[in-house]
Length: 268
Ligand code: NAD
Image 1 (cartoon, rainbow, N blue to C red):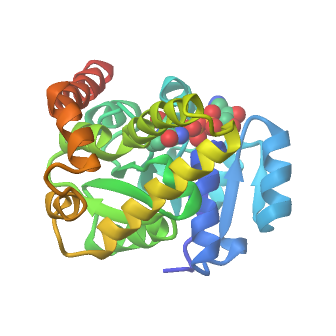
Image 2 (cartoon, rainbow, N blue to C red):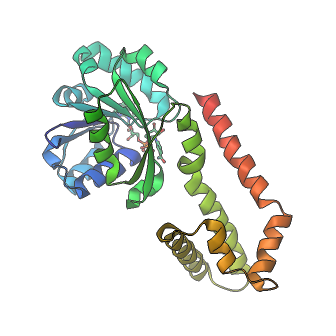
């Protein structure tokens, strides 16, 4: 599997996360090639990971067995048109797209009936703690297992049964780091109001979130049971939780997640 040369078209934040994860998992640097319009980004990637880099997308796809499309969604039509016009043999290769909102049907209009896996990572991939949803079209079991290995260095992977589940995973994991950041921001503001300085407040809130997330991921108990363990009736935590309930936190979370799904559907 590690004999496959993987070309990244677009070497921005998400490509860098995936490349970093691949290298960490022992994928050979000489089998990774990154193509990007902007040569500056490539310099940094090359010096950090010793991978091959180029500003020529066609050079990258020609050398590759697997093509990871990692440009912004609005650039995708231009990139696909270039590939199909200048390297039509790329249709025989495996494509992986990390772009939000571009369906398999749309890719087939642009590239023909290619073998493609849509991947939906999230930003904690940067620290190896991401979740990536994967949806395959026309791919073999080998290609699915290869793709899973590609993403394993960025965190967990989840196979999706229906393409529309990509929109659900955007709401559950893709957009979700920002929900937690927003909650932490609100807590930090109150901590500062209470007299802690900015750095102290940020560190305390982040450490508490990390501790809670670590406990939750290591425990067999449900989130509800974990919460109940630290919520004695009449105590301080109980008062705080009751206040969240009065303000209908669960309804807010539900509305926000469905709003993310609706937006993903509109963008598709
Ligand atoms: P980015 O802007 O950091 O990276 C995109 C890169 O593509 C840039 O470096 C740009 O110079 C390069 N580029 C633009 N046009 C090009 C072309 N024609 N040929 C070659 N390179 C070109 O963006 P990103 O955050 O890495 O996002 C990339 C993709 O990942 C997007 O489609 C996005 O939907 C998807 N994605 C991102 C996240 C995230 O949290 N960042 C999460 C899930 C999916």
